[in-house]
Image (cartoon, rainbow, N blue to C red; front, top):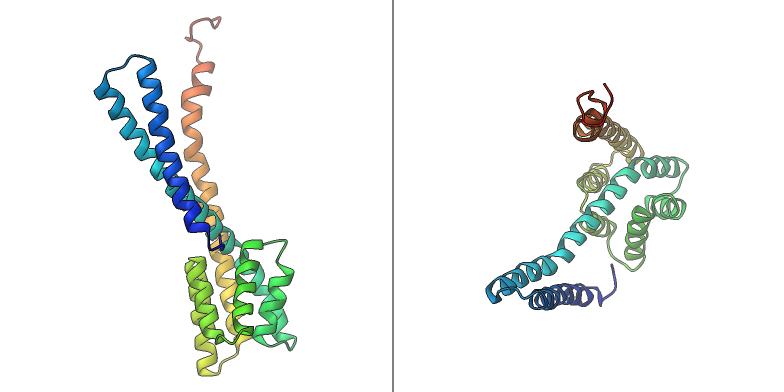
Length: 209
């Protein structure tokens, strides 16, 4: 959310959610004839929940966006390697990747476009890339920016460094997918025990022996 009014809307949503739940809980408590202490206690509790709900939602949205950027890095780096090896400068390659990846990985493409615009406005490329890494909040992005800075500082091949980083990120993405797949078996135990196994038990009331 890059509008200047975004912080105001966020604070307003916290206030509206908190006050709205307080008023709703007080109205329902008084309508049901509850005790004053219980009504105001419940109002304070729900008001706190309403005030904190936008923070929880924002944290989840931030994690989802960071995950999208993390998943799009290997593919974008492959395209960037091809662009740099074909003769494009790094800045032109980043701009090309941002244009090509706008439909596949829009979050990462947006960050690359902002970095390109900052570079065109006169901001040093290293500073623009560091700003991009700080905005994204992705550790892999910080490592990539640090690697590009070191490659330019020591005069090594940027294309080779990008290819190595892309391979590393692809391996990490595959390992993360395998880890999530292995956790699926454990997560399936809860619905199996609570819903499926009782229905298959012959001792369940109503089930013919």
